[in-house]
Structures are given as structure tokens and as C-alpha cells.
Amino acid sequence: MGNKIDFSNTTERARDVWRSLQPLREVRMKVGLEKLESHKGVAIKALLDSRAIGLFIDTTFAKEKGFRIEKMKRPLLVKNVDGTVNVGGAIMHQVECNMFFKGHIERVRMDICNLGKTEVILGMPWLAAHNPEID
Image 1 (cartoon, rainbow, N blue to C red):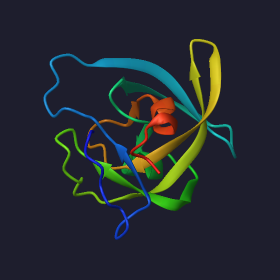
Image 2: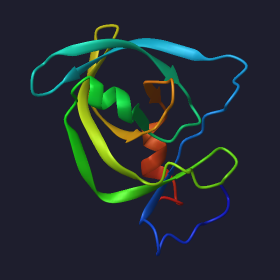
Image 3: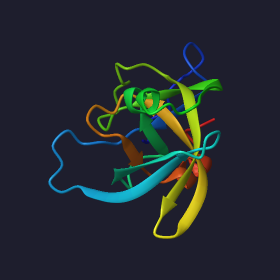
Image 4: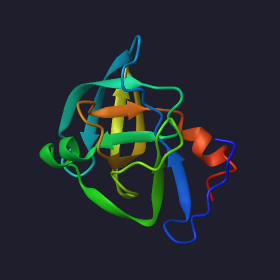
């Protein structure tokens, strides 16, 4: 993450999705996601990934479950763990929902991207606000 990237031709910000292809051990948390409009929810096992900068939801999963998809004002460039730009392209949409975990509820915004078999990645959203390479 030490190298700065010139986003002038693509996007204005970048966010890293750190996800190994063959993790030695995964930590998953059972959480509930609730749609704001209908208050209907779904229980999932989200991947907890402290190296991910932000919260992510899979494109197919978000559409299939009927979450309201919002277009972002500025797209986010996605980089892989090895620093290369993700072939899936920039993140252009988000989902806002309520997330429940053991009696705690929080309204969250999740960036929508292709996560493969993983429905949701819970990273460290505060890192996005404090990362000098973003913005």
C-alpha cells in the first residue's frame, strides 16, 4: 500500500479488497442484514477480514435478496492483495442497510462488488477514512 496510484484517468478514490484466494483459516460471523425500506432481513455468515478496507457485499447476493442499490457519486478503484487492479473494475454502487450482531444494530453502507462465493466481507471501514491513499 506504499505506492500511490494516479487515478486521474479512472476514479478519484481507491479502496483495497484484501482477500486471499486460499486462506489458512477463515473467521466468519453470523450477522443479520435488514433492508431499510421493507425491514425484511436475511441471516448470513459474513467473512471477517481485518485487512479489508471497508464493508463489501456481493453483487449477485445484493440483487437476489432485493437490497436497494444506490449509484455512488465517485467510483472506487479496487486493488487486489498483490497491488494489481481488480479485473472486476471500479466499485460504482453501494447498499445501505441495518446490520445486526448479538443484540447490536448499526446502519452501514457496503460497497457492491463481485466476491465470488462470499456474500459479505466485514473489514475495517474506519481505515478508509484514515487512509492517505484514498482521496
